[in-house]
Image (cartoon, rainbow, N blue to C red; front, side):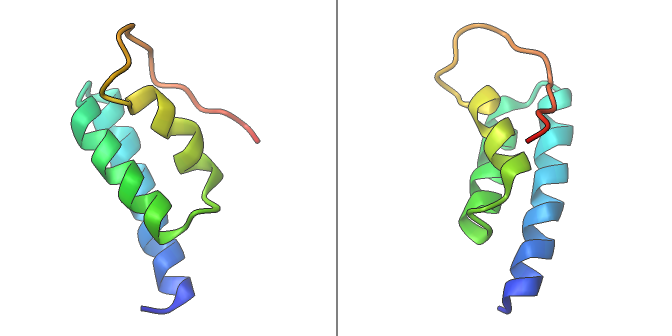
Length: 68
């Protein structure tokens, strides 16, 4: 797979992960965001969302967007 297609696929996975997170499905969001980071380790949006979807986080956190 080319680098450009990896970046596009990662962007799509981040959007799906964000949607899952907004819907309250942290497990699905975590899986999607981890895959996005695997495809594009420099994806700041995925990195900023991954910590709020971690399955070990005990306190509820609302969906957030971090500007980097």
